[in-house]
Image (cartoon, rainbow, N blue to C red):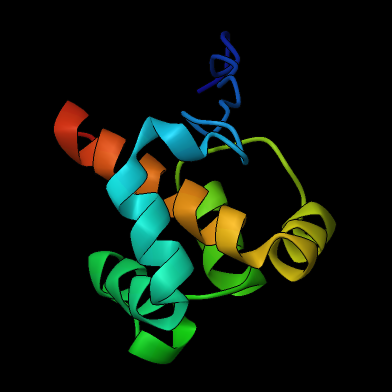
Length: 104
C-alpha cells in the first residue's frame, strides 16, 4: 500500500509561564526559595521519578520532550545551572497548569 498523505506537522509549544514569572504563583516561588530540594522532590513525584531526579537539566529535558516544548538539552543545562531556582519553579508552575487543564 502506498503512502499518499504525510503525517501532519506537530507544532512545538512553550512553557506556559516564563522563567522569571515568579509572581504567577507566589506559593510555588516561596516553596522554591525556602526549600528548593523539597520542590525538586515534589516535581519528581509528580512525574513518577526518584526524588533525587527532581532538580536540574535531566528532569527539565524529560518534561520538555514529553510535552513537545521548544528548547534543547544545552538550553536546559544552562537554565538549570545558572537559574536553578527559577527553572525549578517554572517547571512546577507548568505542571500545575497542565494538571488544571487535564493534560498532565
